[in-house]
Length: 145
Length: 136
Image 1 (cartoon, rainbow over the protein chains, first blue to last red):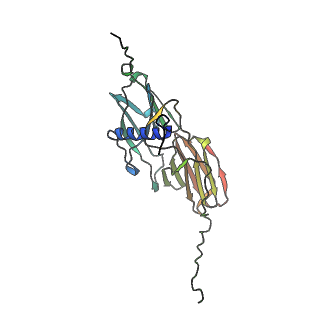
Image 2: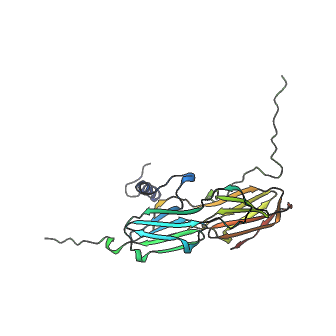
């Protein structure tokens, strides 16, 4: 594909960025496909000041989700239970993962853990993580001699 | 020479339409993970549909086929770029063929926390109609 140096199509640029980032993060995060895929599935969005992690986590009581942050690692733990059924139950199909689980992901930068906010809506957990003040890029003045 | 070949007419099974129509929406379509349980009263279907509430799911019953269509909403973050993705955005669709034992008028559906639970009671009735979804 030929394009001018100063007008790179933004969709292409985004794809390349994502591929690079996925390669980096794949080392610290289990990301297989199919039945062994890590649960819950996670997406991460960033700006320079904030990272937002969204996880598809249906069927969990939000009061029981544990979120911890240590160094640059975010850990999410919870338990998924089957609905109450009674005594005589036969399974025709069981595709959903059930039970306790924990997942840790590496964040892009250190975060201010006291300012982290999380909310759970319709089965999607969203965690907003603001960057730690000391980690924000600072301007350095250049003095002329 | 006379033509000896026979054309086989494959009939679709009675009650199940095999033709597939195209979707107008340009989102990807996923099959939601489903658990199916059978109790004495009937069947219970539990489907994972994160991002869906009772307003964004449609359940229709046509002849013997129960179809669930869900249209989840995904939050948008202004100014953020996607750093890592394990799941994509898309609609959910799944169809099930019901047996004669299911009572078509007694189907209940509830959505809570991104999980759709369908209760299908057992008795015989075969009229097609829509099922309303409650939050709960």
